[in-house]
Image (cartoon, rainbow, N blue to C red; front, side):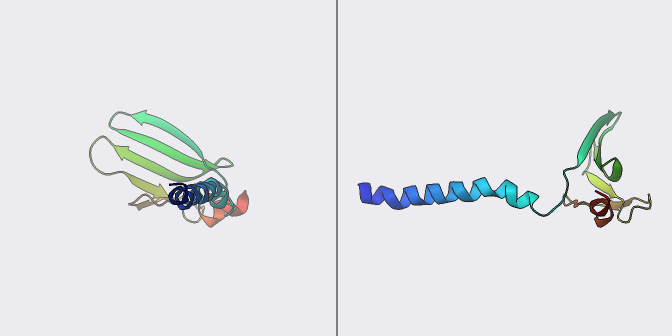
Length: 97
């Protein structure tokens, strides 16, 4: 019985070590953590994403319909609409931080 448990225990320990390292790997990319401000408007929730005070993304969650993002890709104040959940911090924000 003990010999059956050893491979399983090794998998559990190895998997735990891998999961424990994930946050460090995710942060090792050099991207700063955004400051997120959330406010509720009449028919939607708005989340603003900033790094060092620079607004680079706005998430709009309407009360009906899909969420979308407005992204300032080059730091010029012009926000472009983007669907989906993948918002990475633009290079101009990372460079300034």
